[in-house]
Image (tube, rainbow, N blue to C red; front, top):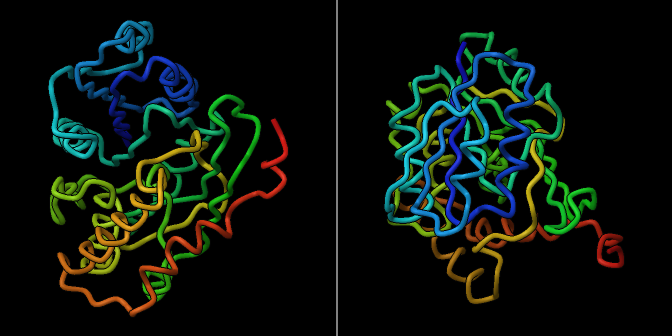
Length: 253
């Protein structure tokens, strides 16, 4: 079983090496790593070209990160597709082997796990732990979602459900997961361990203004799929994030 990993890059020279190293070091042999670069102005592509495991590099203007991801999905030839951002990395060399094992069951269409946020300047310091837990359909109505960098799907899911909705700026991953899990009721399996570490940041949480915009987009994600959330769903989603933070990390450097 081939697993395609898509990484969208743009001026990612400061972080992309960790991403590349984590994929190059995977024990699982059947990996297709696709880089979709939005015309970086730094030396991102020079770093990428140091890694012979990379199967394909696309370098052209795009309309944002989700457009870049869509390009990668379109090019992917693996039976399973995952997304790993250019400031994320897998926690151990065994991650994709465990993902592949979960997909050994032909009924499984989606696999996901846990994620940790780390300091941008100190990846050993965990600032937040996103423990997903077992999927239940009703959980989405209570603000639950799995971390997108741990979300692996069979390629036929994209073919059936469609790719990322690029009209959404920050909630396109959330909308896709609602579509796959709720509307199309894909068969899901949870790996109860941290699969990915992500450097802290993200446009939806960069400011209070962005958080309100993200809430509006989250609501639109439900509407686009003709799904009706509870009146409190949009507020429980960011509250869940607050409860994931490690308070000790505030005082650590």
